[in-house]
Length: 136
Figure 1 (cartoon, rainbow, N blue to C red):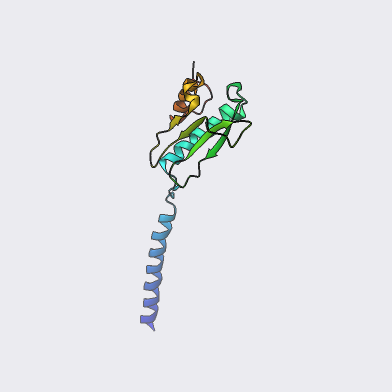
Figure 2 (cartoon, one colour):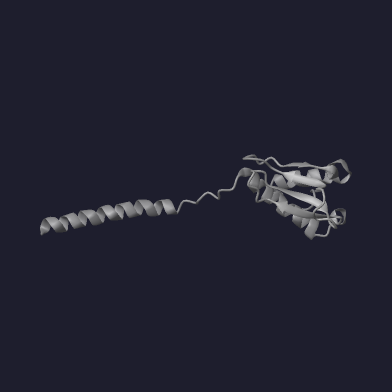
């Protein structure tokens, strides 16, 4: 009988030891599973929507934003399309690819005077500054 009690005590101690090891690993933060490109694009897209679209900035009034961040191709992006023709040809594409946090912008709007502002806004947002205007 003493041998059975000793075995039960040993088994209980082993179980507690194992449980304590497992509970320690649960406290470690789980990775988000998001690629660097998606994290970068989420940051830029949120700022672009806030500063260009939601703020009703007159320079961006003729456009609307089409988010395509949930890309299974590894290329999260958003587009600026004509406001009155949502299915129209994109005038601006802002995207990142693969596991890179580098954001690229291209399309007809980049060749217009607004292109310089778009480029500086995106660079600022990508660097982590979510403000809508460059510091004076």
